[in-house]
Image (cartoon, rainbow, N blue to C red):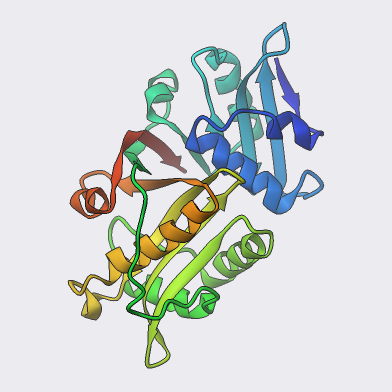
Amino acid sequence: MIRFCDNFEIINDIKENSPYIVKIKSILKSYGLGCNFLQIWYQETELGEIISVISKLDRALVLYLTDKSDFNELIEFIDIIGYSSILLDNKYSYKFSNINFNTGKIMKLNKSINIIKNISIEKDISLKKVYLLLKECTSETFSVPEFEPFYLDMSHRVRHNTARCYGIVEDSRCIACAMTSSETYNNAILSAVAVAPDNRRKGLGKLIVENICFDLQLSNKDIYIYRQEKENIEFYKSIGFIDFGEWAEHRV
């Protein structure tokens, strides 16, 4: 049975055994159940065991699924509530046979990071500067939303300690950045790692990723990253990330 969530603790008590529940918990901590553009539902068995969670922020769905999930009920439900995108664990994407998904890899940091502070990292960098860098780095596989929704969402998450953004600045221009898009007490999801095209092959990407991961590990957080299929494999392996499954995403 699928139920609307009106109690923060119902979701908060779920073990963080996948990056999908980390995303959902981070969204919930950022915006709260009183937000009119966030809804969360959970699916439970007759005995009250929670087997699935659905978050809908605006029209974007994140699904936390398990082997016990009732997929027939879930498919019917998400068709009713509507969506602009769906993100889920690729091991379950075949259950949604009427939906086409793009896929990629999830990696998890598997070693302790030690850093040599030989360059200045800005840990409260202007999101506008970061956005300008991300626009420079736009490609077929890396797109950037409009500035206003990006700024409003990221600044809100940063204020609520569910995201952070680091940058390297040269002559008032951000030339490298890394951020977390989701954080909980025990976990973080790294995203938007970028280096300006004219500053690549200088080690800046590895430097800033190691700096943000070092600080996350000081808070005893496990660190995940979603990467595109066949992209940046050796880069993340060189830092200490290992494969941790696959993601699947559908965009309308």
